[in-house]
Image (cartoon, rainbow, N blue to C red; front, side, top):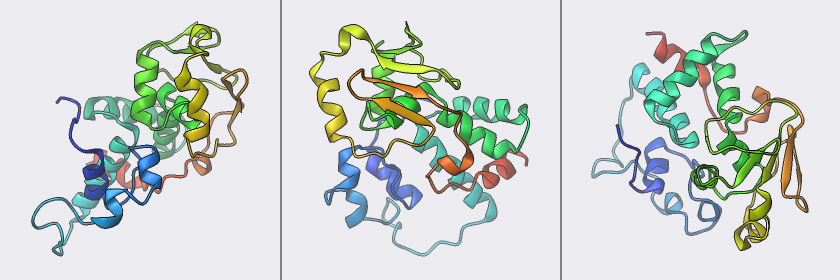
Length: 207
């Protein structure tokens, strides 16, 4: 399956809520979801009875779209979470939060996770002083994530912190002058602000 290349706002409409995939646009009055909150398609405004399986599937699709993963990538995260101690659903969300592209987004170095993925892919980010261009790289407590030294004068990185409307979560700390962030501790379920019913995803994969 190829990566989705259609309208990001259409994905929000399909999941019935804002997924914040378009950066500043999602926070403005121009957000299409505000004017067209119905499901895409000619029958989107009609009433539908959704089965339990359908609800579970929609929850999985919502999380995949929030973090920008394909099915195979998402399944690999779930399988890794199953092997960890603790609740599988919480482990899964914490692993998703620990992805390097997500951390770059959470630090305010990108307006969206898709933009953060591109920044990492292009080799603009270092972890503990070493360039890492793998968006799925899992960070650890104590890691230092920074803009590559020769990219700090780039106009984009100079301006991005002023335009990104995010509150940096408590498990991260960011130094704007150095353009680097530190992972103070691993994220907990309470740190993840998205409205996600992870147990429904666990039930779906347990069928």
